[in-house]
Image (cartoon, rainbow over all chains, first blue to last red):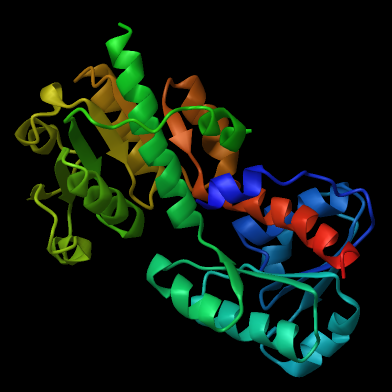
Amino acid sequence: MILKRLSRKTFDMEKNLYIVIVGCGRLGSLLANQLSQKGHSVLVIDPSEDAFNNLSPGFSGFRIPGDASQLTILKEAKLEKADVFFATTQSDNVNLMVAQVARKLFQVPQVLARIEDPKREDVFNRLGIETICPTSVGAELFLLSVASGRSLRENR
Amino acid sequence: MILKRLSRKTFDMEKNLYIVIVGCGRLGSLLANQLSQKGHSVLVIDPSEDAFNNLSPGFSGFRIPGDASQLTILKEAKLEKADVFFATTQSDNVNLMVAQVARKLFQVPQVLARIEDPKREDVFNRLGIETICPTSVGAELFLLSVASGRSLRENR
């Protein structure tokens, strides 16, 4: 369902946006690298300075080492000026908390949280936080491959 | 790119297939539950018996507690009769190994491995193993949301 919904949208990112990303693991760094490369202003927050090693040499954004669940860190990140806020840590609880702070205290217009446990998706959505669950999306692709595999077998 | 490629395929899974899934974590159990519900014969392998608690009460397939990297376990799973094989553990190395065994020793027609580190995708593909990387797919959706968010802001 997510795939259908998003595939209708046009991928148009010409305008320069200020994007704050919490978490610089595989997902966060992948997003930071790609969005920076596209010319957006990107700021990444992670408590571990080592995590910033995931950023590519071409990353031209900002790094704040620290705990994003502390207001001082989010103020330092000038969250009130952010166009987009992504919570991408591996902890659903951290993501939910910082996403709510971004949305409700700093009025960031576009807030999106990664969620690991698909069962919690409903709770996040009821609290007004939009989510992306890589596990659920991955599962959809596995299921689609069963369909495509079946047709491959029948064409043998 | 993955999204575009797969969205063209028709989701048609009426035939009963024999599907073996290695790993009964969030992804593996989600797939097992859904595929079993659709009437397929599903067998799940996981070293931890606790992992089988992720299966729903309606799951009507088979469970083998054990290490899928041992040939005896895969023989017990009657892999030579499988139509589909999914390697869904959190270890890229385990997934690569068991997927290769399924493909090359048991000639399973449809083999697909989960991969956690997008940088290894190329290696898997060169070894003839098709992969799905939930992190990469999740990232694509985050990036698409930037585009949709931008248009939301402009319509305010």
